[in-house]
Length: 345
Image (cartoon, rainbow, N blue to C red):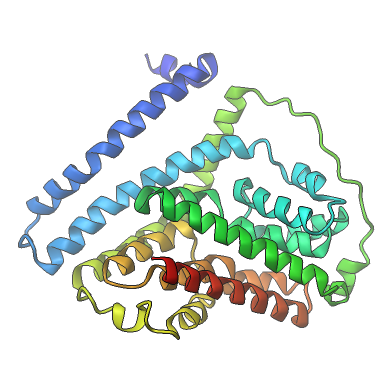
């Protein structure tokens, strides 16, 4: 029996995917009643701050981790079609405008984060990808990634997820286009500008469905194994906000009527470092306490698109003037998104 189960992904991959999807959905539907039962069983008075915080933590922890594992599994399979070499080949020689849009959309489905910024940047420059197109990809990949979109969909619904995707892509496309038009290639580090160009090509794709399933499992082991501490930390902070912060407290300085809230949230978010899976539980709790949607999403975008570690990493290949331009253009776009969301919701 154990051998049959272990061999199922290779012997009957479609059956394995169907059964896994049914089991995943069944477990997901039990989380809310189970979290209520567990919270009621703990020695905390029902309706108290502690009880509310515990129920938030007990519900969101398995929910976010289950969503994360499912999303990463599916996207790991999809990402097997988009190796770094294939991505470079798709973008090399693309003109600005169309190239910026294509790069931003590829950023959604490619498994690259800020830790990959330098090798990706070097590879794109070597392949002749225009500087502005490269920046569209580097902005989109961490900010409008599949994990952020799927968690937003699971927690807030498709309208917010789609609007976030549209405005996030707009920031990536426009920011990359502006940087490209500024013709700032001279602000690359000299050793990057002097590298020999190479021809980017697309190799043959010989992966089977079982191979892609294994790629999905590998992504789950790698990504979930790496980000779960951030998830737990984010949920713990969110639980504390949910249980102990007064209902309308956040509206006082993160409400839509506070004009300076959006730029302040961006300034606070940039020095921080986490990922979409870690920040979204905090976003959920802030919204429940009266914070404006645009302000909170501007904070989220700045944390995952303009993190201090990414800026430090990019300093290896960019001179300070180009880094400052990158931060300024992206920050302006994020603030614009925040104000748009606040005006619509």
